[in-house]
Amino acid sequence: MTHATPAGRGISPLAFVDPTAELGEGCTVGHFAVVEAGARLGPGCAVEHHAVIHGGTQLGAGCRVEAHAVLGRRPRPAAASTVAVAADLPPLTVGDRTSVGAGAVIYAGATIGADCFIGDLAFVREEAVIGDRAVIGSHVTVENAVRIGPRTKVQTGAYITAWTTVEEDCFIAPCVVTTNDNFMGRTERRFALRGGPVVRRGARVGANVTLLPRVEVGAEAFVAAAAVVTRSVPPATLVMGMPARPVRPVPDEEMVVKEGREGEEGEKGSQGDVETKGS
Ligand SMILES: CC(C)(COP(=O)(O)OP(=O)(O)OC[C@H]1O[C@@H](n2cnc3c(N)ncnc32)[C@H](O)[C@@H]1OP(=O)(O)O)[C@@H](O)C(=O)NCCC(=O)NCCS
Image (cartoon, rainbow, N blue to C red):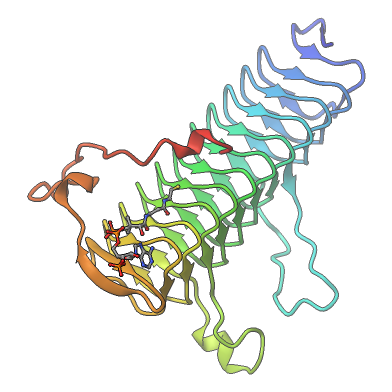
C-alpha cells in the first residue's frame, strides 16, 4: 500500500527514493522499490514493488515499471569475455507511456521510445535503440547495439543478437534466432566479418527461423517458419526451407505499404494479434 507524501506523491514508506531523484507529479513507488540518485521520472509514472531504477535513468511521463524490473543496470563483462564493455554509458532513457514488464532488465545506454511495450522478463542491453510503439515480447533478448524500428513487434522468446537492425513495421515471430559470428568465437578474422542481420521495413520472419550473420531480409519479405536464412532475401519475396529459397512473391494485400504507394504512409497491415499472448 502506498501513501501520499506531503508532495502529493504515492511513495511507499518501505521504498528508497534518493533525495536527488526527481519524481514528477502523481508518480507512485511501491514497497521495496529503489530509485537511485539522479533518476528522473516524468509525471504519472508508476514503479511497482521491488523495481530498481538505477542512477541517472530518465523516464518520460506516464511510464509503468512492473515488479522486479531493473532499469539502467550497468553491464559487467565476464572474466573470460573478449568483448569490451563501454565505460561511460549515458543513462537509459525511456519515452512517454512506455510499459516495462515484471522482471525485465534494461541496461544503461539503451534508448527506448514512447508507447513501447517491453514484456515480462525481457532483456535489453546497452546501446540498443528501440523506436516508438515497438513491442518487445516476454523473454525476448535484445543484445547491445541493436536497432529496432518504430511499430516493430518482436514476439516471445526471440533472440536479437548484437549489431542487428530491424527496421520499422516488421514482425519477428516467437523464438526467432539471429546470429552475428560465423566463426563462433575463433580466429581473428571474425572481428572483420562479424555483424548482425538487417531486416528491412515491413518484413516478417516466422517462428523458429534462424538468420545467419549479415544476411539482409528485404522490405516486406516473408520468411517461412523454421527456415535457415543463409543468403539475403529479395524484397517482397516469400522464402522457405533450409537453406531458405524463394518460393513466391508476397501478395500485395499483406504488405504494410501497398504497391504503387511506396514512400507514402501506407495502410498499416495487420502485424498479427499474437502479441497479446504473452508479449
Ligand atoms: C509459409 C507458410 C504460410 C506456408 O505457406 P504455404 O505455401 O501456404 O504452404 P502450404 O501449406 O500450401 O504447403 C506447401 C508446401 O510447402 C511445405 N511447407 C509449408 N510450410 C513450410 C515451411 N515453413 N517450411 C518448409 N516447408 C513448408 C508443405 O509441407 C507443402 O509441401 P508439399 O507440397 O510437399 O506437401 C507457413 O510455412 C509459415 O511459415 N507460416 C508462418 C507461421 C508463423 O511463423 N507465424 C508467426 C506468428 S505465430
